[in-house]
Amino acid sequence: MSVPLNVTKRKFYKLLDNLSSSKLPTEDSLKEPPSKRSRVSGASSRQFDRPSSSASDRPVSMPAGDRWTVLPVGDSPLRSRSFSASKDPGRPLPNFAPWSQDQFLARLKTFSDVRTWTPKPADIGEVEWAKRGWVVDSKDKVACKGGCEKRVALQLTPPTDSDGEAIEESWWVGDVEDEVIAHYKALIVDGHEEDCLWRKSGCKEDIYRIRMSESVIWQHELKSRISSLLTIKDELPVHLVMPSSDRVNFDIDDFAATLPPDITQPEEKSPLLEATSNTVPTPSTSNASLTQPVNKTALTMAMCGWSGLQVSGVKMVHCTRCFQRAGLWLYRKPVAQDTGSEPEDAMKFDPVELHREHCPWKNVVNQNSTGILEGLSGWEVQAELVIRSRHRTDIIRKARAQEAVDSPPPPKSREEIQKEDKVRESKLAKLRRAFTVKKKPDKEKPDNTDK
Image (cartoon, rainbow, N blue to C red; front, top):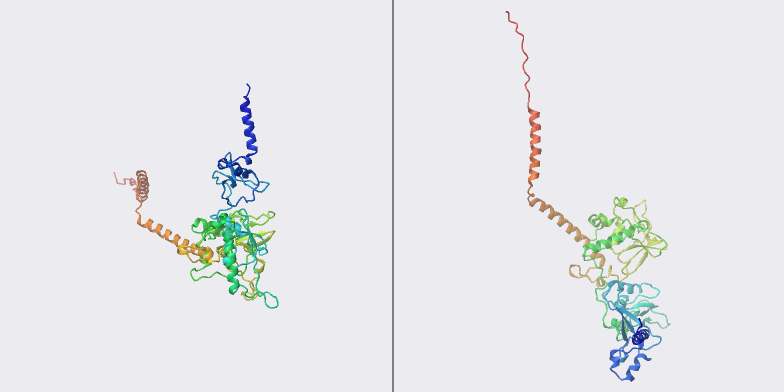
């Protein structure tokens, strides 16, 4: 059977069109004069991400199955961007996802290296830059990577004295501080391109909040932190500074007695975070862990947001919110055995102060709690939730006990009544047999009367 020539040509031309789809005009361009349509396929000085008042300068979008390929206009060679038209839950989030706390924390983590980012005032600190889509690109330089690709360099030069020496004591003072902060605070927004989505809006104020509203969430995370710390229990600090607050009573003995044993004991498989793939954590034995007393040092540190970490065999603790790390070898000096007191030169591990200043475990503003927890930092919220869980458990226990007293017993079924009757009759029969006295018959006496 021969194929018509016109059908073969049609397939051939369709194949050519697919191979050179970048040269195909859009529906809008077909309605314009040829002089304007020619700019679609030709070189253009405009950037792809910049807006254009002419419809012919827009990127050409051509359907390709269930996906759309966006072909930019201008610089050669052409760079194509593609995105799925369908909503696939397995797809990674786009660069602009101001609702995603995971992406916010990923951006914030780029600011954690002191070699590339030095501390700044809170108004132009790392949290504010990360909320607007910025990441650290190089030494004190931020970039909108994956977005408009703009970059901002922060040049913070302290004032100098007559000899040209920097005044380090308080150089963030007076008009210098106000001008510098105002300048870079404006660049957090205006540093983006005009059409960049991060310029139009950023993350909400509560994006940094530690979510602990539901008991299932905070109990799971607390258990994970405790378990990771128990894997390095031999390296934990000997001396701790116990947290204190005017609103929350931090009683570690009370917390240890309140929390369920499955939270304070190690897991079967250690959740110790590994920075290298060479060292494998040693799993703990679940049967033995049930008999272990509560490690109050690990519990205190976990209540304040610390987890165990191992880097190339070196064990330390770290925070997954501010990405602070702390070596434990500085806090291992034991208590003097003769006096039982702490040595004067012993370093104490402060589980609150060792967080970075912007960390929500420490910073009330960034925790941004609402309702009855308003004005509390992360560790205070955690302590308050444990206290409330104890009260809730006591209330439930008392309510169940009272319900058992007040509620009448359920009616018995006919079979149960018959069974109880049989048991009762059996017991009565045994009692009758026990108290029944059998009389013995009299023996016949011999007749001795004379005949």
